[in-house]
Amino acid sequence: MRAATVSLACRRALARSAAGWARAGAAPGARLRPARGVAAAAAQQQSGRGGAAAPAPTPQQQHAALQAEYFDREIEALQESITPEVDAKLARIAAAIPGLSAASRVLDAGAGEGALIPHLQARGVRDILAVDVSPAMLAALQQRVGPPSTLGNDACVRTWLGDVTELPSFQGPFDVAVFNAVFGNLLDQHNALVRTCFLLKPGSYLVISHPLGRPWHEGFRAEQQQLVPNELPQREALEALISDLPLRLEGLTDEDDFYMALLRVPEGYAHPAAPIWLSGSVTSGFGRGSRQLGVPTANLPPEPLAAQLAGLPDGVYFGWAQLDVDDSWPEADRQVHKMVMNIGKAPTFGDAEPKLSVEAHIMHRYSADFYGQPLRLVALGYIRPEVRFGGLQELLGRINTDIGIARSQLDLPQWQGFAQQLAAAAPRRS
Figure 1 (cartoon, rainbow, N blue to C red):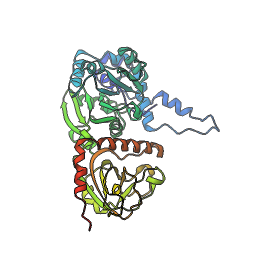
Figure 2 (tube, one colour):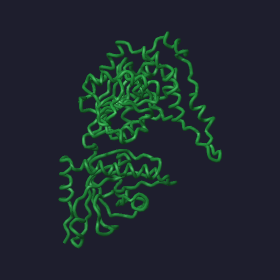
Figure 3 (cartoon, helix red, strand yellow):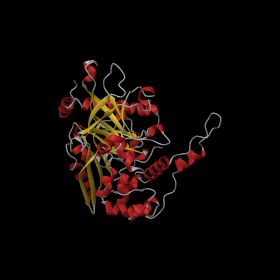
Figure 4 (cartoon, rainbow, N blue to C red):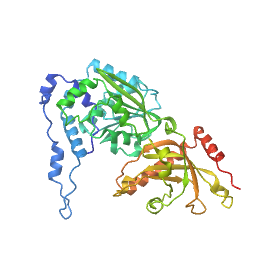
């Protein structure tokens, strides 16, 4: 089972009547038992070779199994909870998402059996990927919307069984991602937002909503903390949650019986502190970029840059770079070039005492090494926070994605003038 991204059914579970609870065989305050699927898997985790035990299920896997078992079992009662009042609130959520059209691609994270989908379609949306951990919910969703096209480039409603944090990158990018009546069920809300940002276009929207409101959600959470481990965040908590993400809070409606947060990836991934001007003499780093990843980087010592780096989240930025060398160097080496830069401590490598580094991959093949030479950078866009990947191959794949994003974004007119500013600021050499 995958980690917890659960369905719209969470919201419907909250809406159920006492009769619905009785029919489901559970009282509102009943504690949930560990998922049978995970328990069975743990008992049978013996490898076919040599009898070696497989790794025990992670907390996220256990939580996902708990969610899947619960919502698979409760599907009929939860479907019946979609009252006209609830349906009107779902329509309100869809109506409040800017820019939806026939050209939009929407990720419905925790889609359940698809109660939000007709309202997205009423806005003209045709291309929707519905993600959920519950097989029964997705089967019901497919019955609701009909079978998907067999052609991969046809706009239709498709399903994907699992956690949105494990959704393959080729499924994106999306114009909108929606977490409707599911955000409190996530075991790690920050990680879910990080991984979803990987799938979003610049200028796209991310929605966190609950048509029954935060107070009611908190009442249910108090009774079912295993099922709903987290709150729907109020403004201060939400701003803290996204402080290191390429997301801006565009609006928050927090009524007694309705909750909707509208977040946006900035156009061009623009960082609010940009332009960020950095300079220093290139120093040697760990050698990982060239030796282990095949992506050479120029390192700047972070200590002299403390003032510029203060308040910046660790993560991946893009902008322009220029090496300040004399006329004995080829002209191409002296020009301004695109760059993607990581500020952080490289958590994937698991150093015992990680140190902050500033590493820029400059998109130019230089004629010679330039250790000790002065380098000037201007960072403009912020792509993603620094995260720990599952290994070097996963890290390398994401680095190549970051390079591609930086390369394409720097072709936009809004960033061209900064290359000229960087060149104009070059010190004159006698």
